[in-house]
Image (tube, rainbow, N blue to C red; front, side):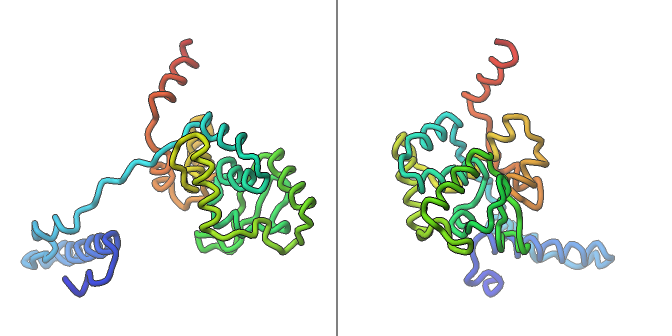
Length: 225
């Protein structure tokens, strides 16, 4: 068991353990009832038990809007909006070229899913400002639009959060895009396939997080106010 877990992350260890446990259970269920499942040890189950998922922090729409509107640097504001309005990952934003943009449709090259390409969608008014930025800076079709590093982009997001006194990370903006779409009535299948581009709904549901007190009060007021 030590070799089986050596050098692996805890999440990988838990996955390997669950696969081994399922394999031995299959052997037992196939007719070898006298076989003892070595993974059924209480100690091993405790070591490799699944952890409770940590709830994501959801940033309110009003906070995100304030962050974006108070970001004066044009480049930085576009980077923030592509994540907050289009649900794009920071790496996808940094790899964008003008040739990837077709109005409100953006082609993601070599996405995380392993597919050759994917499509992200942004509001047309954001697409127009992005195209204006490209023209103003004379960016060639196959040049990166935002020629900054990943750490620099993370710092852009961090400093943007400091404007309103919160700790902000790139993925907080992506989660906001999904949560806002869902709370506004977009079907979860569309949130999953279009906004987040997930392969299954379970991953999307973890992104959406809990309903905050502010959201609960807003929905009640909309219904009965």
